[in-house]
Image (cartoon, rainbow, N blue to C red; front, side, top):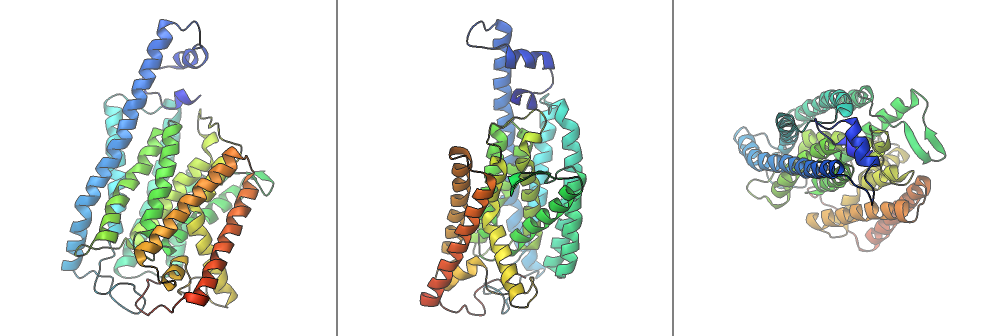
Length: 423
């Protein structure tokens, strides 16, 4: 019953029943046509609210980020040049300070406008949304302040790890969990308790993946833009406009940041841990909501039985596969998985004489490729999520082996100032 999920006040269950069940190819009455026009009009207005959220966030980003850079330079809050850094000179790494305020202000302000003008969220969704966003805001704030402290004075990875666990528990309390694996390795609904454990592990992994892949200009923000745009489009399609507003509220400030991070010279800035932790957590929340889309009130996706999880794997594969591969490599060499090195996939591309912009472009195209591949395999060929994940992993291993061979033949050693090494 997709129609009911997005209807505001003034439209009741009886009208919805007539809209869904009483409108056929023949015998459409005047009341049914009127209701359809009202719903179409409301769809358009709700879409405009999403666009407005994106626009406000983009504007805040364009306004705030250069001022953050100026203040950081005045106060000498730099990402100082040392043997582990890619850049030359002092560049602020506080761009991520703008992410949370821009996304939340645009989302909250436009949602307030919706209620003010009578376009309420469906009553059946309101309690669920309130519970979710109260806990999500709590989790984001934990990571936002920990990331800010790390960018300013440094925070040990153990403390960051504990903060990530607390933030993940917030999602469990919000009821946003991995409770259905949709047939992955033959597993469906998870027993109570195991879903919470798997959710905490998944959220911590996603947050760390985005924190660790932030190694060359534009990569983390570019991946985040692709993933959140994809999720936002699906939420729009299934008329979950509130979640679409949240997604595009983050996309707006990411695009503004991308400009200063990639194209900036005098006002160049990095997102820092404040940005990467916040971004990873928002993606984890919206990704889990998308994976469990069928469980959202009154939503029937029409996708295949395991398509949402397969699509989510495609969106997250590049950062998560790289993180898992690097962790396994470090552990196999007897080192801590958080020991910094130059073994991430963007390091490999730099060793092959690619520039930072070229490396980012290649990995963003790879990201789009995995999303498209998983969609085709899940929807058009109707493969199960297990086979799709195995194909993704095999492709990831093949790409890594190919890069290693090319590096052995044509590669070079990276200089000590070539890369940002993440733990």
